Image (cartoon, rainbow over all chains, first blue to last red; front, side, top):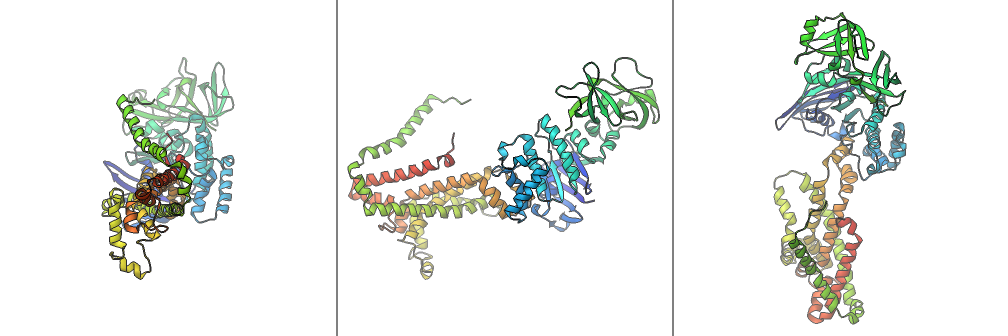
Length: 361
Length: 259
C-alpha cells in the first residue's frame, strides 16, 4: 500500500476513528453522509488537522506518528488537493494559481509559469490562464483547481467533494475530466464524496464512512451486492448502467451497454448517441418465478448469482446474472415465500420511468 | 431592500453632518484670503509643511513595519499574557498625547531611563526630527494594529492552509497569500496612521519641542501663529485640511468602504 492512514480524533461529542489504505494507481472513494468525518479524515492526511492519534505513511515514508511525536508539516507531505469550495487564490490569475505549488518549491517564476501552462493545457484549460478566479464559471474554476492540485507533482491526490458545487451540465463535463485525470495520476488517489454516483463511477474501491467509522470497504460491485449497513444499501445500492442512449419507439429510449440494454423514458435535453449513466434503485426491481404479464417495459431473465441477507433492515439483496446484470432488493418475507436461492432461474422486471438518466461526458 | 430610518435618526444625522461641516465652513469664511499666498510661501510655513510630510510619512512607514507583525502575532500566536500585550498595543490610542510625550521623555529623554544609553550610541531623540517621528509613530501605531488585526480575522484561514498543503513555507505563504489578501486593510491602517501623525501635536510638543525647521510641524506652526497672528494660523490650518482631504480623496476607494 502506498498510502496508509490510521486516524483518531475526538471533538465535541464526535469521534473519528478510521483506517484506510490506498495503492498507487488506485482511486479510493471515501463515501459518507455530511458530518461523517470524511473531510476531517482527508485534512488529517494532508496535515491540516490535528488528530489525537495518527499513523500516516505515504510511499512507505511515515509522515505522522503520534506514538513517536513524528509530524511532517503540511508543506512537506506532497499532497495535491482540490478543496471543497476550491479556494483558488482570488488575487492571482489562474496561471499564477497553478504555478503556485511549483514556485512554493523554490523554482523560478519563468519555469513555474511554463510548467503551469503545460498542466493547464493537458486538462484542456489553456484559455483560462489569464483569467481571475472571480471570472470563471463553476466548471472552469474546477478545472483550474484540478490543474493547481496536479502542477506540483504531488505524491498523493486528494479531492474533497470535487463536483458538489456544480450544476448538472458542468458536473457531467467535469466528471469525465476527473475520470481521465484520476486514471493518469500514478500515485494514490483519494476522493471524498457524499454522492454515491461519483463514488461508483470514479473509484476503484469505496470506503463507506458513517459517524466517524469506516463501516465497509470494497469495490463498487462488492458493496452493491452485499452492503453491510442499511446506509450503504441505500446509498451504493443503485443499479448503474453506463452506455449509449438510442431511440426506441414511442417516446422511449434504450441505454445500450456492453452487457445488454434497458428501456428508459426519453430524458429531456438529450440526443441519441449521448453517453449516459442510467440509475435504477434495487427496490424498484420486482422478481418473478414466471415471465411476468403486463406492462413493465423491462423484463430481464437470468439466474440468481447471490442472495445476501441483510445485517440490518428487512430487505434482502439478490443479484441476477441477466443481460445486463441487475440487483434487486426484496423483503425478507417474499424471499422466503418464493424460496429463492442461488442458481434459481428468475425474471426481473422494472418500469422504464423508474430508471434515472444522467449525462456522462 | 434597505431598512427604514426613524425620523429622529435622520435629524441627529443631519446634526452630526453640521457639527463636522460648520467648523470647516468657519475656517474658510474667516481665512484672510488676501494674505494667503504670502503666508503659505513664507519660509516658516514651507519648512513646517515639508517637515510635516516627512515626519508623518516616515511615521506611517514605521507603524506599518512594526504594526503588521504585531497584529499578526496578536491574532495568530498563542502565548501567555497575550491579552495584556493586546491592551498595551492599543493603549497609545486612548492615552492623552501629552502623557505620551512625557512618557517618551522619561524613557528616551536626556535624563530618561535610556537617555545615557542613547547618548552613548550617538542618538539624540528629544528636540530632533527623529524625536518628532518617534512621537508621532508612538501615537499612530495602534491604528495600524487594529486595521490589520481586523483584516487577518476576517480572512478565510483555509487560503493559508491551502498554501501550506501546496508546499509553501510560512514566510512564502505570508508573502504571496496572506499579505496580498489583507493589503486593503494594511493600506487603510497606513492612511489612518499617516493622518493621525499629520495632526499630532501634544506628544510632539512635549518630546520633540517646537524648533522651526527641526520639529515644528504644521500643527505646531498653527498653534504658534495662533498666539501671534491668528490670520496666518487660519491659512496654515486650511493647508492641513487640504493636504488631508487630498490624501483621503486619492485613496478613497481603497480606504473607505464604497457603500
